[in-house]
Image (tube, rainbow, N blue to C red; front, side):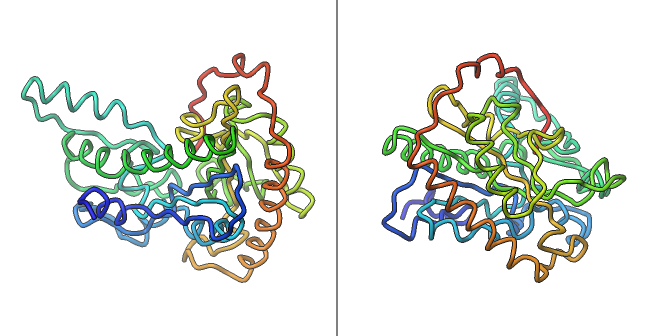
Length: 304
């Protein structure tokens, strides 16, 4: 096994389909990683830093391969580098600085590619030290880039086999919003960046399946419309659909201790039923490209 392959196995995992059933669905979880790299050198308590995780989303959706759906998961934490943010600027800035012989600093931002504070509702600084642009570049090339290379390959391969692909980008969300000041009124939120990353027919089918299980479902709610991953891979006009799924953490775990509670079993069983039915729909009825999708492609920076 080559060095890049060995490294990839350390930072991500791909759960392949465990059935002969072929499907046009692909899924990923970029924020559930909990293997903290040795060079992270954060200063806050790890119990606080872990609040940035989409804790247990990888386990909540681990039934996907049994449905024939390949499932990519990041092993590294989003607080180290966020695979659901764009890393192009870091790479461009580093290359420009290298040509000039400069060694500039890098400033983490709230909810950015490399973040500080921990979360908006946990405003604790992640670092008590300065970060360099070189450090950010290393994280982008060694973690962010391999994750997207693998996800792109899964999506491309699935589309080649089926003529279309439906990608599910799996996340969790807190039970409070507005920095913890207001109760989140939804159990699940589905995001397509206001219809630019997936056909509305698919979005509504998935919503209706979830509602039939008793969940209150929001669509493209501000703050949860979708971020870099669905933006990058969703292209309905080319039969490439990407939907972000946000699960309210209170449904399945204690948000303070991050320990799953008994509700996790029900949520997982419900999701398995819903995704199985959604898979059958997608495989039996190729979704049409949305004729007005180009009108919806305006940039929307809200999301995960």
